[in-house]
Length: 411
Image (cartoon, rainbow, N blue to C red; front, top):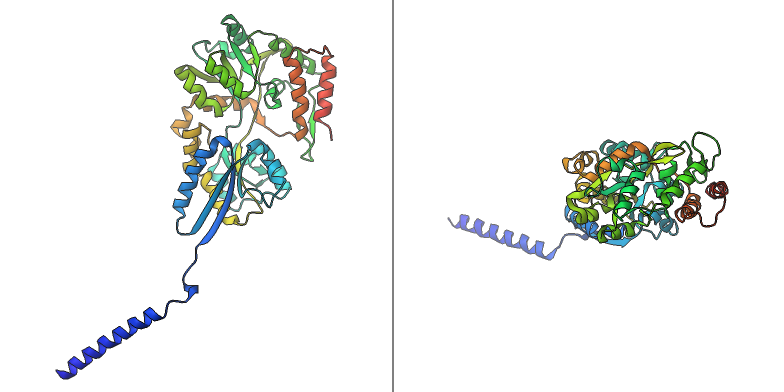
């Protein structure tokens, strides 16, 4: 009995001694993992701030415990992202949104590396979006939206379905009602609508920088001067209004504009004003050289890029994947009305029932990816502004077309 008590007491002493040793000898530092601090800067459209903050919060919650994240959002126009980034690649954003026409220049300058898991992106995104995010057969960015194009908004209380098939007819109806139909001729992006389906051409040369352009052609069924004359006829209508996007919305809100050419980014705002009377359709035809020509459009996608100089490339890529995930593309549609590039999100009933997205898809049959060099924009804007003002200089239309093309094709 005494022996049993002694052994029990001895066991208790050993337990206390071991516990004391544990308290006095902490585990080595290397056995305690230290969480990495990951600082990421994200550039995005100013209008996306609230949406992106929501996406950042879900990203940090999903990866909680794996790193301490410091995600900083900064507003940056998607259309000017390339210039801002290439001005200081090492100091630029880790993750950024940009328009697809910049992908080749960003890749060539070393700002983008090929996407590591390209197969997964290719299988989940719309083919056109994959093409827009690629240079040749190499994928360089994550497709975000497939809606960077334009179409016709109209107030169904003012126009019939038949009216909106023809731009001239729409101008007649609007003039009778003393209202306006708007389009932005200060933007060469929209002016492509008049030339795109005429047989006249514009595009990038093989160097990926300079342009070819035949918009001043004096031969063929439709010549450059025919398009110029058609534009002058449209501009002469009292119902035509040459105004930028913001002024289009202002006209919708004050009731002066009853139709206009714009994109899905305005769908929510137009719907708020016109409600159930908001109509959306492919662009109308216009009369040119005695023919009815279907108005064309540039198309494109918004992409998410990962800076090749990011200090945290793996986490930057994970954040880019998160922003462009199916779930967050659905969220972007709900919040911003933007058309998803993800196949499953794009085919959802909610997206398919959107009038704006349906119109954009219909117009896609008459559109092409925007692939022009930087010298395209100013000369076309200068020419179109002259047409919108009724050719106030009285200069030869052919001479103005020749000057425009000379500027577009300059090396």
